[in-house]
Structures are given as structure tokens and as C-alpha cells.
Amino acid sequence: MIIPGRFVGNVPFFPVVVCFEGRETLIQLLADTGSSRTVILDSDFDALRIPPEKLVPMAYPLTGIGGSVRSYVLPGAVLSFTSSNGAYGVQQNLAVIQHDLDVLSPEESERVLRLSSVLGRDIISSFRFVCDFPSGTVRLEQPYSNP
Amino acid sequence: MDRPILGGEAERITQLIQAFEEDCLWIQENYQNLLSLYEDQWIAVLDKQVIASDRDFKKLISKVPENPRTRFEFITRKPFEAII
Image 1 (cartoon, rainbow over the protein chains, first blue to last red):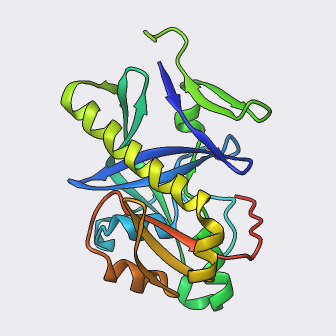
Image 2 (cartoon, chains in turn purple, red):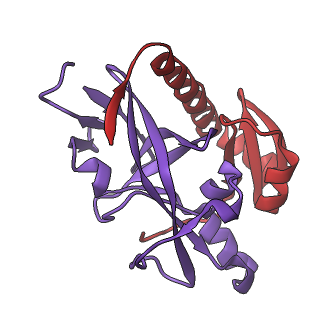
């Protein structure tokens, strides 16, 4: 099975449908092997239009993203990828990071909102991750499943 | 829980993603033109058309009818370097 991604410039992205309690949105996840978890950031969470009260505070803080942030999960969210076998779904307690935009300058806020949500090792590590810059190929492969 | 998605639902997801990717690609291909019209603004794109724009992202979200395929993008010449 192959999940195709694509480069935007030199950045590897995977398109995904995020579904939570019947609400869906499409976003691009930046493949980030430095991140232990897949995380939805501010602008993508806003695009989901999920009432903030649905967010459950995370039991432990996420480390590594600068600034004043709050960490939450969306319990039982489903991420769906297109694949060579049709589609592929991952259900998990999806991490959501919310920056305190009210305390940031307009320029800082703008930069935070431009940050991409990330596809972390919690999902990438189930696959062979192909990130071939010279050929422009980005994909996740499960070599032992049916093509 | 990871699982393959089959049948009609797989087809629906594939079509959603394909249309979304076409809009993402359209933004890339038309970026210079979009810059001349919407520099330093957020835009909402659906079916290769800009359906709304605003300098404020939250205001833009409130202007746009809910559709999971809407692609939001900040149009700017400012370089963006990020360590996530």
C-alpha cells in the first residue's frame, strides 16, 4: 500500500481528511520525523470549526513548540489518507496545540497561523517513509501489504 | 487504530483529497497573480476560485460557508522560516 504525498518547494506534505464527531476538514500535514506526535496547529483547528469546549486538556504538556501554548486532544479523531488501496484511516486522540494569539503581536500571530500541522512519528513509523528530494517523490509505503 | 477504508467511503475520501490537491496546486501555479490581488491577506479557495479574502484569518473563516474542501492560504512575499 502506498500513501502519496507531494513536495511544496522542498517541504513534504500529505493531504488528509480530519474527522471529529461528524465534522470534517481537509488539511496538509507536514511530514516531520522530529515530532513524536501528529499535531494540529492553530489555523487548521480553526478551519475545523470545532467548538473549543470539545477539546480535552492533554494529560502532559507537549515540548518543543515555542511560545505560550495550550495542549489538548480531540478524542477519537480520524485521519483519512488516500492510498493505492483506496483509503487508509487512523483513529487516535489527536493532539491540538493552541497558541495564545491574544498576547502576541500581529506579526507573531501571523507567523503562528502560517505554521503547518505536522504528521509525526506516531503515524510515520508504521510505514517506510520515502522522501526523495532529487526525484520529487514523497510517500508512505507498507511494503508487506497488498499494493 | 489503523485500518484500510474500502468501498464507497474510500472513493469519497479519494475524491475529496483529489479536489483539495487540485486547489492547492492551483494556488501554487497562480501565486504571482494572487500576490498582485491579495498580498498579505488570507484567501479561501474552492474549486480553483478565491471565494473570500481577509487580512484577519478568523474573520475569513466566519465569512466562508462551511465546506471541508476549502483551502485557506496566506498570500505573501515575506519569507517564512520555521523550526517545528
